[in-house]
Image (cartoon, rainbow, N blue to C red; front, side):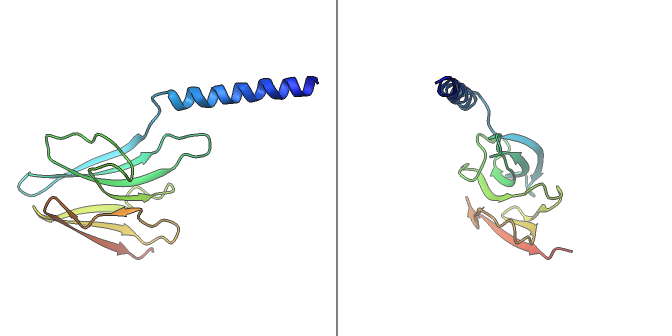
Length: 140
């Protein structure tokens, strides 16, 4: 009977802890943020390394690229973010794993290392008239 009471109290405590954590303002944590202005200055490509903020063994680092106008802010993160054109789990790989290069004001090249453990979850090839090319570099 005592064991059942302890189990019930523990269950209620863990449920409350999970609910408190889920209701908090926990969200993605940006660890790296680098802006690349397009030639002509009409667009900004932003490379971010983000921790999804889930914690409790569910946390994950990912690389994402956003395209936006210089006057716009990044309003959300992750694969479903409207401005995100590229998303890939980074698993703590070196920060230079993803690189960006504007060829001109309408052509962006995103290069990333070949890694069989991590494949892009999102890789948009056209965004508001911008052509996006992907290059996979061989791991050394």
